[in-house]
Every structure is written in structure tokens, then in C-alpha cells.
Image 1 (cartoon, rainbow, N blue to C red):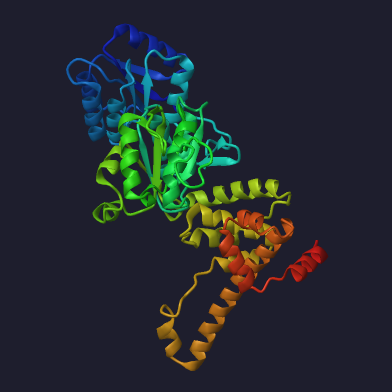
Image 2: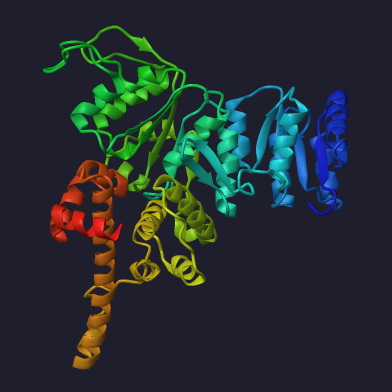
Length: 470
């Protein structure tokens, strides 16, 4: 910050006030102190505008949470970090809902205090200007917009509180990455993280996948097998697409949440586990509850805290950073030179609505990297009008209709050509291993087979063409 930051420190213990004040003044912060919530509120009412408030939770008179609520009313933009001797999950969640930026448990070291203060005052340093953060191998969390920085701050806060978290957002917004980030920032970071896609596993197999089974539990169970909850003991499990879980299995999951124990299929013995549960979904929650597809009691149990990821169209300022990041990572992965991101291509990307969010952006850039043709890439982003959208214009006259149809066909043909060429490249790169090519293109195996037939891609012709162009 260009000026010395002003910090208001509120704590009823004189020794703690002196200790924290000394730690802050070493770094040249301007520190004012208050011994009660009332005193802190009076200072703000008299015109004090702190850049940051460090606020003790347990104080006589007006406690820290009530002081926080009133502070946020008087100074809506003020950043507040709560201090407490006890890591009380309920108070942490309440403080987050009231707008606290972070939560420190006393006693803490100077490094812990510095990290929180720097983060709140915008002085934290990350791998790329604090915007791109590596979560685990080749998985990154990008927070370059105010909305995503808020999500990052809330994730850091809730990570230290051992409660279920519900991750909401459209498909492709990065719910799994957020779940991994919460695990990384939590005390369970050195333990196992597992993801289970409830929509990808057939309903009759999902129970055995989660809870395991004993030998002979069903036809084909030739040996006992532990489930994901056992394998994830002491760690974190992410239940993706939780809304697709069968209601009967939702009831069993509810018991695990409540009692932390279950039985394998075919067993009467009880297995106790200590697992942090995160759940993610893109469904319409009220609609799913009304239709009984999601149990109300399970929803409220999972909803101890909710993080809602905004769609990419609501954080378009991140698009240039995302494009550069994905370009760097994919160029390294596929051993290809990075391609330029011209102002025209960036403008086309900014104008696109990205209904598939980060997943669509990633796949778009992958096709651009493989094809190396900016014009085809830009054409793919042009708005597509269906028959309903262009009907009136087409009916207004023969010449006008032909022109509109020609432009639509041109855009559609450019997209089809780009998609077909990307598929050919992926098949060549994997020596025509269709399953590997589907994984490379991030589409299903069935979708790849359909597109191979759709575009009439033949192995011999494709192989010859790509070999000649290499």
C-alpha cells in the first residue's frame, strides 16, 4: 500500500494488546487499540477509518460477533479478522456470515499474523501476482476478480473448521478445484483427498463404491473391498453431483454425517471413520427439494456452509489471465510452442458468454493450440443463430435469407472443420487409441465415436495427412 495502513486492535486483555501491537508496529503499521467493543465502535463513529480491524471474539459487554455486525453496518467495506482462544466452529461460521475476512486462534506466531494481515491488505504474494495458486499437481486455483478473491478468502477460513461445505455453481466453474483447495488449506492437507462423482457411477454400484462390501455380499463379490470412506479416513472426500445420488443412499450418507460410522455391504460390524465431507452440485436446490430428489435433512446437514462459484460470464476480467495460464500449461504438456493471444482473439473471448465456463475455455484453447489457426478459433466463438432466431430475417426476402444462411453455414463449417481437425490431431497423437484421445479432448468415449462417424474420419487417411504435415 502507498500509505501506512491503519489497524484497529480490539481485545480486553492488556498483555495481548501489547503483544499484538508490538508485532504490527515492527512492520510500521499504524496501530490503535481498544479494550471493548463499545470503545471500538465509538472510535469508528467519531471518524476513524481503519484499513483493518483485529477483533477478539470473547469480550465483556458487546462481544466480538455483535461488534463485528455493527462495524459492518457503520463501515460496510471494512476488513475484519476475528481473534479467539477457542476454535469454535459455530462462531467461525457465524463470523464468516457476518463478513469476517479471516479467523486467528490465539496464541499465534508472527508469521501467521503477517500472512493474514498481508492477505487482507492486498500485500500477499502468490506464484503469479497472487492470482494463480497451485493446489496440487497441474491443478490451479485462479482468483483475479473480486468475487473469486472473496471465495478464496472464505475457503481459507472454512478450511480450518471441520464442518461439511456445500459447493454450488454451474457445470465447469471449478467446484472440484475449490474442494481441493479447501483440503489443501485444512489441517487434513497431509491426508487423503478423494473425489466420487455420484452421477458417473451407476446407482446400484454407488453404495459399494462409497462404503465397500464383504466377500459374497452380492454376485461377483469374490473378495472383500473397502469403500472410499474407509480409504479416506482422516482425510477429505468430495461427493460431486450429490443431487444425482439415489434417495435411499442419501439416507445412509446422512447417518454417516451424523454418527461417523457405517457398515460394509454384507457385514454387520460397524466401521468408524473420521472424514471431512465436501459436496458439490449444479442442480436447482429448491426444485430438487420440492421434487424429493434431494432429501431436505441431508441438504441442511451438508449446508453447514455454502460457497457459490460465479459463472465465467460474471468474472470476465479473469479471461485474459485464464487464457495465458492455460496456454502455458498446455504448451508444456503437449510439447508445443505457445501461440499468440492477439487483441482480436482476446476481444472475441471477452464477448463470448462461455456457457461451459472454465471447461469450455480450456477445451477452446486446446483446439487453438492443436490447430494453430487464430481465424478458425475466432470463428468458433462467433454467435450461432438457430432457425428460430433467424426466422424473421430469412423470411423477409430471398436475397436476405440466402446471405444469412451463407454466414451461418460459414461459421458452422469453420467450427466443424476446427473440431474435426482437433479430433484427427488427438487420434494421431494417441496412435488412434480412442479412449486416450477422448480423455485428451475431455469428451466421453461415446461422443468421440459419434464424432468420428459424423466427420467421416478414417484412420488411414487421417494418419497420412497428419504425417505429411508434421
